[in-house]
Image 1 (tube, rainbow, N blue to C red):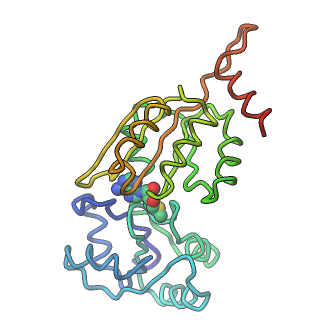
Image 2 (tube, rainbow, N blue to C red; image 1 turned 60 degrees about the vertical axis):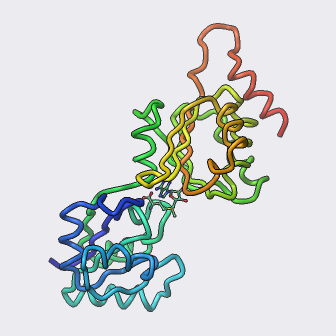
Length: 248
Ligand code: SAM
């Protein structure tokens, strides 16, 4: 039926796609892809031959209008990103919001998402979590963003680029303290998949000692601050946080 289908695609292992996602992609009139060349591998693998158009962060208003008019004419459009779930640190928000404004139906076709895959294997409290996506790229801004999370008690999830991951882990040690538990999830579902849970300090040492551990795609899952002590004594964690805050 007409409308927009927001379709999750694999994070790396091509088998991680649902039967429904394949059905929707096969029957869509148009597939709007973040990067049509990148998605060609997936679509070829599953012999899906629908028309593809690019739809990324910088897609023009005209292109969005074109997709909307096709849906208004009765077409079904599938939105995919390079990996995982569209709109999760990925483009698509403008198109989805425009569909709602025009009363066009929007259907999720759920599947892989790096943040959720990482949380599911992190071994850290998962009843409550805070997805932060990418931290600012500039060191000063990254540290500032981390300091603003110093009091967060929920588990935090970050995406990070390989060329920044070492510096980011070092900042985590500095801002949250070396004893904070964290899990590095690297190359999930791919050949070099690595999941390591340890204190921030020992993760930093391990990563520094082996540059291979700085390659690929990363999700960093970081435990929240331990709930404050009810006694009069201030905990080491709170003392560390005060030191960090006074230092800014
Ligand atoms: N929409 C995607 C999702 O649902 O997870 C995320 C897109 S975002 C532009 C890309 C980031 O997701 C990467 O830089 C990395 O932090 C994370 N990521 C994607 N695939 C991953 C994988 N296989 N293993 C670890 N992290 C991954």
